[in-house]
Length: 252
Image (cartoon, rainbow, N blue to C red; front, side, top):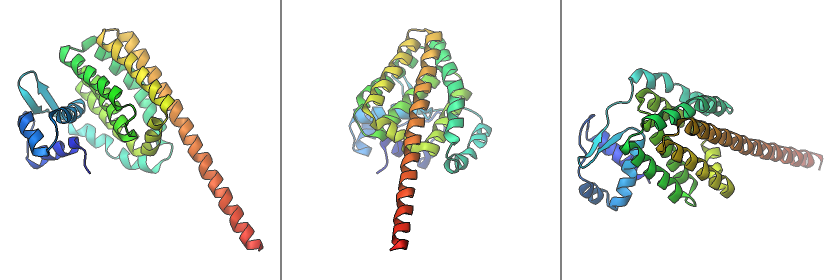
């Protein structure tokens, strides 16, 4: 079953809604999709964090303008197939993210306005509420938080690049990312790290925000390496047992 945010995105595409077009009211959308208004707001927040929608105080929800020239999308899209085929490609993605995330958090701490801080607060609350939920829900809350940080940086190109990197990472190690959120100790650590990033940004502590973002990605990278190593060991063990069984059958 499709997520509500995907259904709203399909509504935008099917309806031919262009940048600047206003969405129907929350009341109507909630009725059309048969969901509560709180669930609808959460889906709208996810799309806003990805730069697809933008909310205006007391003015409704609108389709956002494109975040960057289409040439940037064209530059990133061919990498998706490479991410699927190359087992170690995620490490290249993480290397770039470690460079960009720190600067994104730094800029967000310097430039975030009241609306940005409100979005960040909502995104962090979603992370807290998602703890204990299924891995996919936690991963979505995590991505939405980082996109809210990118939005608060007020750098349109940076937001688009960050969105592309999230997609590439998902393509390359989706199974490992889900395992990351199934580990209770890891989930608690991730929430603490997100809290440090969030607090530094809303308090305007740019250097602390950059440091917290970099430490967070160091932790994620180390955890993913452990998960990947464990999976590789499991595959080697299965192959060894399979070979042993074949050899035993051949001797009998």
